[in-house]
Length: 309
Image 1: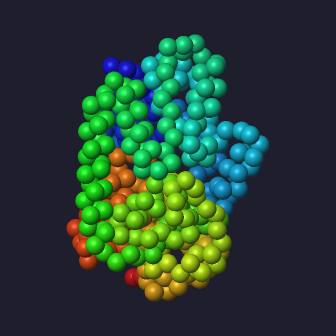
Image 2: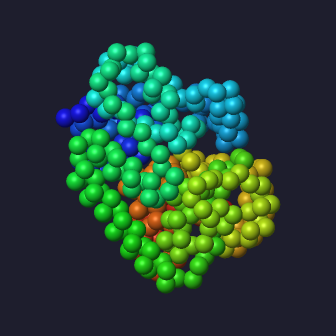
């Protein structure tokens, strides 16, 4: 058994999918899945309150990053007490989770010379696969890693094979609301698998801040709102902001009743095994006639907007 600390929610899910949940001795502030990890020590905390409105969160994070500071705090004393053999973190996005530099700085304060760092860098689906295998190898569980990737890919292939028979639905994937941002990374690829054609951002390697008028001009057939870190209830609350609502209602698809809000926190923004669920969610939203089973399966994590009584 390797005493393992995960400082990113997707890694916690990967470790659990490998069958090594009992190896976890500490997790990040955002880790909430699978059920049963709630009592583990939490070793990170955000410097900007995530419950604040989107625009305030965005401004606070940008100011911290601009000053060259970390967006998160690590509980160094708790890390010292736990003395992990392995720490899993990421070096892809300083705003999304504790970064490699944060961990290296914390370890400089401690006498943990034997602690190994496994760092993830997920930019697209290929990277997600590689990261799962990297975590597995770092924990001596390569065979389990291949199994997890194989299971995820089997579900993705099933979506893609059926999705390719559907007419392309042009879709805007909104990953943040104030300011509006269009999702990149692995999400355009998931949309294409599900029978969609992502607008504005088509490639994997960037997210794009836009104006509401840009989305309106792109005239997508469907809008899917999946803000990073937000569940459905939080996103619906944000959509009640007058400026956000005004911008959203400028998009023709909204007026045609083709806007859906999905749980971005649990699914789309976590680069791990549950991206297969994300593809199934998109398939049910974009083509319910082909994916009626998935539309029913995920109805509790998807809502139409505007909400009608």
